[in-house]
Amino acid sequence: MSDESEATGETSETDVTEETSERGRTKNEVNETNETNEMNETNDTSSADGLAERRGMNIEVYQPAEDSGLLAQAAVEYPVSGTVLEVGTGSGWVAQQVSENTDARVLGSDINPHAARQARERGVEAARANLTAPFRDGVLDAVLFNPPYLPTDPDNEWDDWMEHALSGGESGRELIDPFLDDVGRVLTPDGVVLLLVSSLTGYEAVVERAESNGFGVETVVQESYPFETLTVIALTK
Ligand SMILES: C[S@@+](CC[C@H](N)C(=O)[O-])C[C@H]1O[C@@H](n2cnc3c(N)ncnc32)[C@H](O)[C@@H]1O
Image (cartoon, rainbow, N blue to C red; front, side):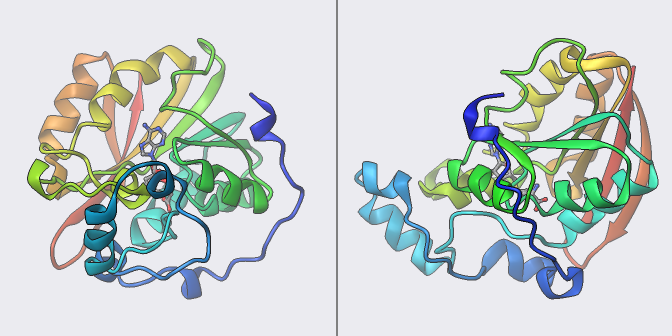
């Protein structure tokens, strides 16, 4: 991993109940941070800024919500072990929970540099990376992913880091599909993928894509909310 992955050694104690908020609210209305939005600084995104403000999404790093909690629970209960990567680690909260509650060495990666930094501030070894692209073949015992999965009309896309955290493109699966196509490459022969899937994303389509990549699929945990059902599936070869 690059020098971006150097952990700071700072680990903040996190109270799950404080950081986990009502799911619908988290997807639509999240707290503010003082971090600078580099993406908006480097692009002409005045209209996107307006959209982000109207959506109440003036933050850069996805904070833990019910989906985060369900993925952490699944990883601890499974349990994962060995070298584990959390793709799209966001704040690093899931990686921190798994690190503290299993014997795994947990790494994090995220396309968002603010997220990679926030995860490092939690003590997670985290680097900026696009999905599993920079990782070597056959080195990871488990890969965890709570992906951006909300189906989004292209006319409604907004250009900021929250879009990267939430939007799965028109199908909801624009990140999930390439993830499923490559993740088998980085796993050890006995490795496992724990993937969070929302009913909004099309559960059957995700399972079909996983199976077409040679994975067996089983359910680890499932929770239903008023507008969606969240399932963590385990994929093994
Ligand atoms: C729903 S958030 C989950 C954050 C965190 N894992 C959690 O559960 O609280 C999805 C995360 O995936 C990241 N992401 C989006 N596209 C990515 C990509 N191509 N490669 C790596 N991470 C990506 C986003 O920046 C965001 O942090």
